Image 1 (cartoon, rainbow, N blue to C red):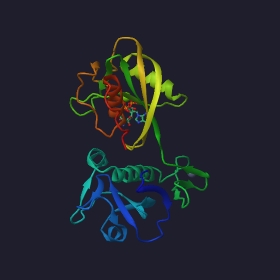
Image 2: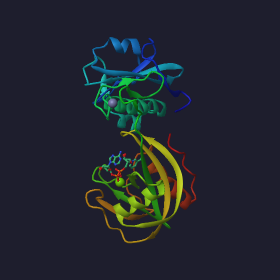
Image 3: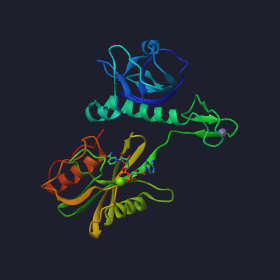
Image 4: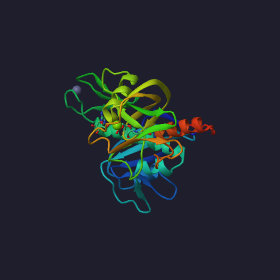
Amino acid sequence: MSARWTTAVLDPQITGGLAVARSPEGFLVDDNGALFPRDWLKRQDLDVLCEHGIGHFDGQPVFLLELRSATDVPGCSWRGLRAFMLEGDSDTYKVLGYAAQIGTWAREHRFCGSCGQAMTQIRWERAMYCQPCDLRSYPRISPSMIVLVTRGDEILLARSPRFVTGVYSTLAGFAEPGESAEDCLVREVREEVAVEVQNIQYIGSQCWPFPHSMMLGFHAEYAGGEIVMQPDEIEDAKWFSVHDLPPLPAGRSIARYLIDLYVARRLGCDIPAFPS
Ligand SMILES: NC(=O)c1ccc[n+]([C@@H]2O[C@H](COP(=O)([O-])OP(=O)(O)OC[C@H]3O[C@@H](n4cnc5c(N)ncnc54)[C@H](O)[C@@H]3O)[C@@H](O)[C@H]2O)c1
Ligand SMILES: [Mg+2]
Ligand SMILES: [Zn+2]
């Protein structure tokens, strides 16, 4: 959330306000951005799957129109969330990041996971409900650990085959049932590079709506082992000097913050601001 944006469960029966439209192609945008007058948007020929009231932007209610498919709207185009993360202002990115997670959840929880019947939208909380099962499904959040492993002036960075060419980043991975955050971190580092760590320190967290990760960021010191890369997951991993770093992840990512923070401390430079 930000000073301009707060989340809320709003009843779609009320009229007016602002709205965003999200399809599998991304968010609808025109020259003014992704937030449209809602009444105008609802008059367009959109393939609406469902509508959710998601919060207030500058005091105005905001709704999400989750669409089955992207249709042509004159003067508009479709833009993926990643582009807003890379280039958009942080207030808009917060609204759209939240809208994307609500849209993903709404799309994937239309039917009860227990009995398979259609679920209904609860009006007063963010949940889908199955009456026969008395089951509520809330938006899914997936805790993921992300860690910068360091050895004096060196930092351990790796590449996944999914990354942009040349970019190296910190190690990350999803928590499994039964694990603490620290257990997960130790396991992920072992699995991905076969290295042991010590002095694990929590730094901060970040919502990562691709599609529903909650990144918990840590710093850890190298404790032993030689790098052995996990087949398929890790394409390359090595120690880089803080004086000679490869291309790094996007400025808004906690991965980049963990790297910038350590490098700044090591070189005695100004501490970077936490990404918003
Ligand atoms: N914000 C950042 O700075 C930053 C940086 C790196 C990674 N990330 C995110 O961290 C997450 C984990 O990173 P990773 O790719 O190294 O993960 P990972 O090492 O766990 O490997 C990904 C694999 O985990 C499995 N998986 C996918 N979704 C899952 C879920 N919800 N729960 C459990 N397992 C799941 C799949 O088999 C997938 O191939 C991803 O969402 C990634 O986008 C964020
Ligand atoms: Mg990983
Ligand atoms: Zn059910």
